[in-house]
Image 1: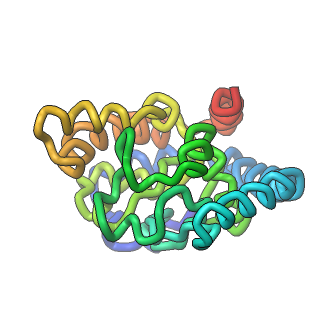
Image 2 (image 1 turned 180 degrees about the vertical axis):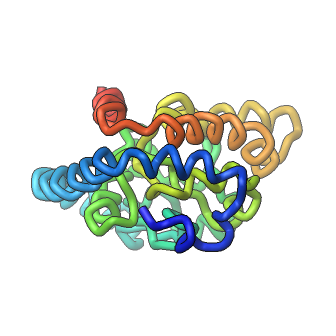
Amino acid sequence: MKKWENLPEIFKQSEIEPYYKALKSKGFSLFLKRTFDIFASALLIVLLSPVMLVLAILIKAEDGGPVLYKSTRVTRYNKDFTIFKFRTMRVGADKIGALITVSGDSRITKIGAKIRGSRLDEIPQLFNVFIGQMSFVGTRPEVRRYVDMYTPEMLATLLLPAGITSKASLLFRNEDEKIAALTEKGISVDEAYVNYILPEKMKLNLDYINNFSFLEDIYTCIKTVL
């Protein structure tokens, strides 16, 4: 981790300092976390390459659009990066609707619905993990629009790289259904996410930062697979 004085100015706040100190004291665990990310992502990229090839063919065959969906998200130290996913929505879907998808979203393609249901659309993020932009476990990366709404304390989640999975991701794996239920009450998708879903997820994410453990990361990975 960077020294406190070398952190971006936005992190030098009293609300963040306790989380920073908690992580700083776990240097060896952080080393194991990054080592695991490198070797495990490399291995999975090789093993899952046939699966990625099949998914790429199916996505391309459905509508001729690009295989990958690329989006700018925010990761460690409040830095923007390009996240990779298999495309599960119609081309240009992010420009004709909300940034958050809901259950039954008409923008999702037929193949995309099957891929999203099994979380296979996340596989390309293994490349993000390998190059250090993400980790296997960590706060799911948000778009800049939502990060700009973070409280000072929420920014502490950006002391570590964004993750593919987390306790919050597991508990909110049916997030789209929760949002759909709220929109049925007349609440907009954005309002439902920012005011109801995000605060609850961030409580879990902050607890993860405060009590970070490499062994807990491994446990979370196993739970995600199961």
